[in-house]
Each structure stands twice: as structure tokens, then as C-alpha cells.
Image (cartoon, rainbow, N blue to C red; front, top):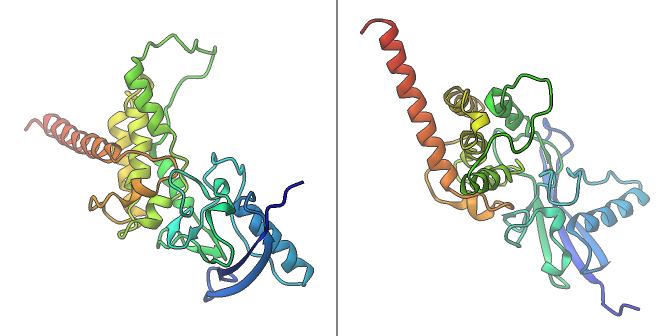
Length: 263
């Protein structure tokens, strides 16, 4: 039988009825919290207590609870996803805190991520960026052998590292400019490195960057905070790669335009 003592904590949680209402921090007490609980399980316990009291439970996003989907986005004590490096909120365990701690929990703070309710924000701006060009157009038909197109392992590894981005938005939330360049660059780089992504390579870079700007995300000033808090530790290399892809595409497009005009 476990003899681990449960923790008593004070939570200061952002509550906001809807996107049109004003929000505020509300204090909650939780007791006998197991250090082996995940942060989301602790919120489940709190919400059960609120429901028993007839109060509105705290709204927060979650899905897989395995660090895959990127939904569990919370600003915990001033850090996206909390104090552990390379960890999503659902993978954060209460042993990261001490008995008697006060924990501040807020939603992402960025204009392109408006708060819908409590800790839930609207991240469909990311979806629109992906729709603009984060895909590969292929003809459907017979399933292609996975090994039909040889890819050098260093390139495959690099593409895979970029592909691990889960689109949680922590990079935007922590950036002083609310820049989405780490997210967008990971998606562009992933496809730019692979043979399947070559036909639409230039068009993809232009469309995704232009959509990012249209959504109102800020510019990158290379502070590196995005990569530092990313739960998948996406490298800043991707931003440099995206800049090269975008500039090359713009120059090529201008040259083609001048050639067509006979200049």
C-alpha cells in the first residue's frame, strides 16, 4: 500500500465565460493530490468537485493525453505546458510541484488565438495555414511501396524531426511578438526535404508564409524562446530553412515573371 502523502495546492485559474466577456483569475483549493497524477488529472478532480457543488467546471482542451495531439495547451506558472522541458501539459505530473504551492494557470495569450472559454483558445489560424499549403498533392491509386523512393537517412531523420511538431502553439504563446514561424517553418521544412514535396515546394513556402502574415502573427526576432519551450524541441534551424525557401521562391517567381514579359 502506498504511503505517499497527497498535496494541498492553491490554483489561480483564468475563468472567462466566452470570447466576448471579460475574464479574471479565480482561486481554487485542491487537497490530497497524488504526485503521480498528471496535471490534467488534477484538473479532472477539481472539475468533479465543482460539478458536485453545482458550479461550472473549468473548460480546457485535451484529447489523446499522450503528448501527441497538442491540445492540452496551458500557461502554467508563466511557462507553456509547465516547468518540465520537452513535455506537454498532459505529460506533466504533479510531482513537479510541492505541497502548499500556488499554481497560476492561464490560456495562450496571442491575438490570433482568441480565448473561447476559460483555458480554451481558438487555434484554427493554424489550420488555415496548413490548408494554404501544408500538404502534398498526389494522384490516388495503387498503394505505393514505402521503399520505392530512396531517401538518405540524414535527410529522412531531419524531415522526421521537423514533422514531430504537434501544432500546440506554445511557440506563439511564449514569443514576445506572437510569432508562428517555428510552427510554419517545421511544416515547410518537413515537406521541402522529401521528394514528394518538391513539385509544390516554392508555391507552398509562399502560400503558408503569406497566410501566416494574414492571420496576424508577429515577426521573428530570433530570441529563441519558441524552441526553448517547444514540447517537441523543434530546432530553430527550421526558421532559417523557411526563410531560404521563401526568398528563393519569391526571387524565382519574379525572374519567371520578367522572362514571360520579355524583360
